[in-house]
Image (cartoon, rainbow, N blue to C red; front, side, top):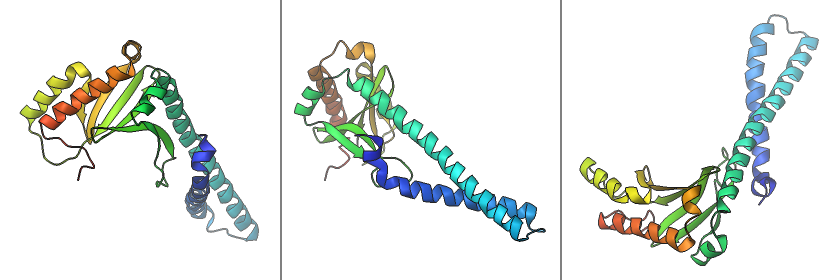
Amino acid sequence: MTFLQLNKHKLKYLIITCTLIGFVASELFYWGIMHNNQNEINLLINVSTCLSIGFIFTLIVFSFAYIEWASKMYFRQKVYKLISMKELKLYGFKFKKINTDSNFFFTEEILEGKIEGFNVFFDSLDFNLIKIFMEVKPSRSIGKIEFSEIESKMAHLNGKLVYGGVSIHYKKERLLKMNTKMIINEIEDIILLLTAHDIQPLNKA
């Protein structure tokens, strides 16, 4: 889906918020300089200037936010071409909208599915790397010794325990040598390791 299809309902909020912030900030600054000489002409110049600054501030914020959104979507689409979308859909994977309820982040689309009860997300940060993230339930603390044990066992699968779950990184060169079944099997191997250490899916009842 395009940017406007995903975010047109948020643009009004962004424009109003940024314009108000820019207007108030510039108004305070302008008032601090001109408050001793506030005739009608200066007041008109003041308001016009502040409105213009608010509009410019909105354009700057939107430009940076859009570039960040477009970059992430571009990288995702590049790495998604390295995997079989058709086969992943057979495993129940589909595109999911994220940040839909946030007024501070644009809505994005990410490939998401569920394996053995674990939410699994396919993401990317650059051209040559796909990151698979699995959400886990923070049901108990994990000691340093057990943490190191889990990390060492999943090292050959490129898995790492991170805040909120497990992150698995696949470089382009490795992905080109793998098929969908191999990727799913490695994810299932990590899940077996997690459940053996009583680490459960995030949404498990």
